[in-house]
Length: 119
Length: 111
Image 1 (spheres, rainbow over the protein chains, first blue to last red):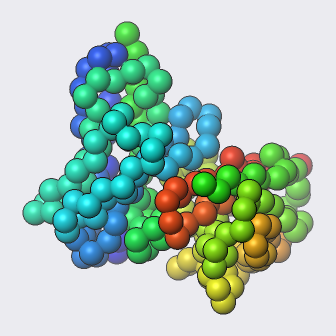
Image 2 (image 1 turned 90 degrees about the vertical axis):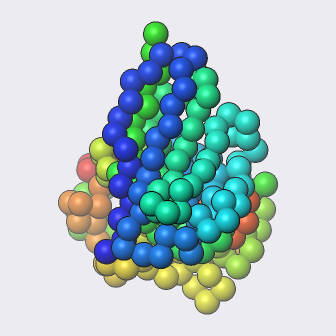
């Protein structure tokens, strides 16, 4: 059974750094692109970017380039989303997703991680 | 970059009724590469259907009351007979190349 298990919710202050994780199982982790999706409170879905675990090839949505960093540790089948300096506007639920293939539909989703940034 | 506009914003229907949701693209979608997702309150979205040159394919485990259609710039998601668990928000998405844009969503609510 394919599963993407994300780390728990976080409460941070503006300016702090954060890394959230997404562990894949039940499939060959290095063979499928992993993506990240943001959902701000009460809003729709926004695609942030994708990363290929085997070689860390990363493609960002231009709207998120320079705002976040995606990475993977293929030895533990885990993908990461990182912020160096959080803003209140980063408050959202972040989902990791498995792509069916490069630039394909998102066939499996993590449970989501709520990040709250507040002073 | 393709923009997707979903309509209506909210659809009020009763269980057993037919629902038709629309997704209009700002330019032609190559190979009809449109996917549809369902999100129930407090849950992660899930993939329902994805399009291709030979038509729309249901994701694993998705009941056959869900079907997808359309081509070019106009796409639809049809739920033939609404079940209580189908009242949710539905999103379309273009795939196949960057950016992997989502539409704004349609909420299907109980009338």
